[in-house]
Length: 247
Ligand SMILES: Cc1cc2nc3c(=O)[nH]c(=O)nc-3n(C[C@H](O)[C@H](O)[C@H](O)COP(=O)(O)OP(=O)(O)OC[C@H]3O[C@@H](n4cnc5c(N)ncnc54)[C@H](O)[C@@H]3O)c2cc1C
Image (cartoon, rainbow, N blue to C red; front, side, top):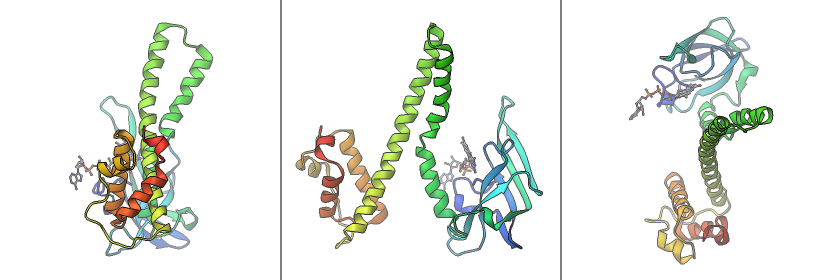
């Protein structure tokens, strides 16, 4: 994704794919590409057409990192180790069958993949397997091993909690959308949706879950600008059963 002039502003990607016989010809520079110096393939977000809306006209393709026209330059850390790379593409051919999804839908595909990547359980599960194997082979009888394992488990616990809470927020947001599709709104953007007092009236006890319900509704409201107050109350009743939340 990232490029010299397109980091946080991802829609500014300059890498272009021009139509070529049976595929595309890619030219541009990618930056901070993790692992490109060791991998065989990478996913490239590139511009396949110029559109007024910069979020349109982007496409994702799979690129062979050994193809003619690809140069990969590792960017060394201060300690000399390497992970990130600059990847320069000079008229690199990518066949049509290596387009991911649809031509022109790169923005929607890319951003939804990122949402899942950020909540991905593989972030902790991939290294957790190493611990299991270590315990199988060596056990945890001496104190130094116990201290190292304790430290690692504490770290994983934090990442696991983070990953679960992001996944739950994504689910809750999907639930709001599904609910709106089922019960179309009759009124647009009420001045205020629900307050803490409304939730207390419904029987919920203030606490972290209670705050989560309010912020989920607020986020959905900002994006969709459509939930009515009655819908919000019904949504809370259906999706957050009192016996689970009202502790
Ligand atoms: C561990 C790690 C792995 C990564 N792996 C990959 C990878 O595999 N592939 C890939 O493509 N990229 C990867 N990246 C790069 C990452 O996507 C970029 O770092 C990110 O998009 C930010 O871009 P940038 O570093 O160019 O920062 P910039 O966009 O230049 O931002 C620099 C600073 O300016 C601030 N800023 C930017 N825009 C604004 C604004 N409009 N208003 C106010 N402040 C602003 C930012 O918050 C930041 O502090 C990785 C990054 C990390 C940390």
